[in-house]
Length: 170
Image (cartoon, rainbow, N blue to C red; front, side, top):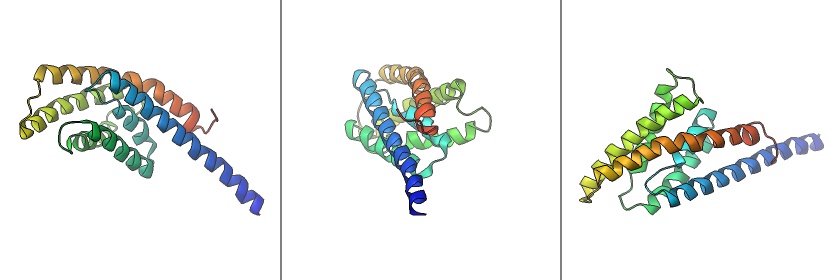
């Protein structure tokens, strides 16, 4: 009986290890993009990967990690990304009633919407703090984010499906 329980724990431990490796890899890729393209939030793609999986604890954990990483590097007060990510989650659940989840078009439309939300929020938070945020610069960042998030999401979603969801080893 103990051998059977031990054999069942090994695949779970391997699955957990694969998930941790995948999300560490994703965060490194996202930070790499954000280092070279400041003002663009690539971690949105990670939320768009994990939300459809309905893994509540993992989603909350990644939500918190992404917010801490993003908010620690910004000059605006805490809350902008909390609002942006919350709107993303809400719009995801509303959008999934209309569109097929996991399609490039769905992710692209969500990315467009969230980029617009980002543009509005950055203007509001900048004004509240007395920091001038160039509307032109914020618009360019929003457009770039709307284009890059689906392009990062697509290959990372396939890696997630191949190695994490199916439980294959790397």
